[in-house]
Length: 331
Image (cartoon, rainbow, N blue to C red; front, side):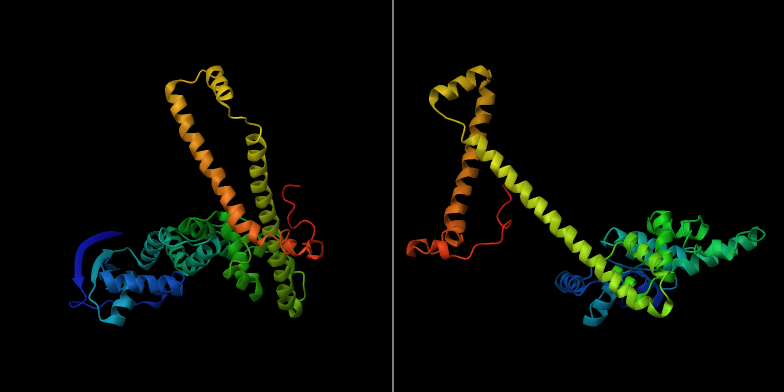
């Protein structure tokens, strides 16, 4: 890849949109596209569209589409690539830093490069006297019971998108063998690659005519397990926060900040003047924290607390009580 330093304005040349380049990466979400469009409408298209020497857009399809839609001018920089595969790899490297792509999305992008990589490998093998590997090894699609065998194509695909070779192998297995329900769940980020891969292996034991329905049920079970784990994590977090407050108050109420006690503390710890100044600032900060806690309890929690509702009317005992465990983080 080389920047030729050649630049064109949209009034001089028109770029070419190649579908396999435009569809290489996942589309922007509606929100992302709208934000980019608003920025370009307000500030102009300040980032150039990157094209190759045939004027094919390599990077900047969304900017081009927005400028075309609104009749806005844009610049194009010409980069030289050895072939379209190198251009795709460069575009991917450039965009990976801008997009929050997960491993499944990266794996799917790699699979789009598979025909180009295999074609280049065949050319290299022809130049080097042929290939000794089997077709199964070249494809990376070994049988499911042994799906992690080493293959050149898989390694190159993994390296191209920055995935581990084993992860890339699992993506290839899912792409080849998984029912539609599993792939859809991965696209929606409802399953991890490992979960999708394990389900794919398990579903191979199910008769083909029942596999899709079994996949739907299996995905729902995995989603339910994920929700249980999320709720457990939320409970753990609530318990941790409650524990911190309990410990802080338990220690704070033990203090009797009389002048004599504070003087004893300062003298016994041999505080320097600088340390005393730091202690003053920290004490004032702590006072602000506890005062804020008091305000939140007094102004926001007490008015809405079920335990205080209706007490003035003498009917607190008839108030509906929450389920056991609903307020028991400190217990």
